[in-house]
Length: 343
Image 1 (cartoon, rainbow, N blue to C red):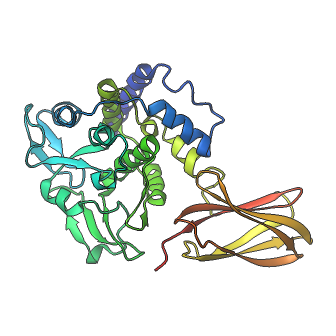
Image 2 (tube, one colour):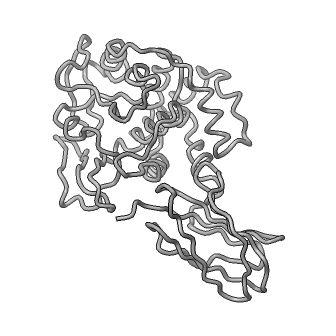
Image 3 (cartoon, rainbow, N blue to C red):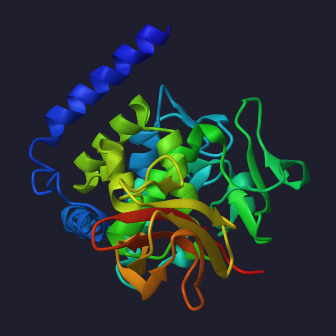
């Protein structure tokens, strides 16, 4: 069975690669951070379909229809809808990027953009509403949405205390890539109701990579509305934009002389403290970059031989992922840190 699924996935990948043609030729291998995001936005901003009814028909009759059935994106529940149903009752259509979050520009195109539309059980769709997509801190105290399948989604409190909606593990990657696409395509914010969804979406996309259905669906959307979700075709773009210069660990040791030996707390709300060890006293520069590679803070340092305790006050900056870099004339060290919403 496993070998059969792998064969199907490889076949889907082969067909999609053939269909892509030269679609990504303009995206250089050397692009990263804001430059890559800008290049992808220019590439995928070609969809002009604003027929919501047409999009729903495509969703329920083609993209998600398997032998007359569609699957709820949050619960895995199967609905027998035949080949004429267009989401008029239950199941209905979920906008993963909630319509109330839309900025005014291109709103009718956003509403009909299939890359973030999915079939959804009506009760679960209503319960999610326009809540941020994020991890619920305590599943035992949350509302659970499931049917006869192993899929379980949750509505509850994030660790920040804000009410959020956490999709089932089986669809986290799909939803993450849909939201990352929407953010890049329309430049609409992933910070909603004081919750920054981006760090979770990056993690979910990496942990739950595209499967054969998602790849085939992306091709179908391309044929219908003329653009692709690049994070399905090239999942590595996620890290090249939002995790550039970071590693699997929180710290990157320098080649000689300097070493981050601690960053705390991480995540942090207002002020981060970190410790840098030096083999000799030296002048250095502290710089902080946001996830787009933009420098948001800089200061000069005098580091003593041994351990140096430093701090960074993030007042005025949004929650999200930041890179702290300390560099001297000959080397640099970098640490990744996550700023949360203060309570």
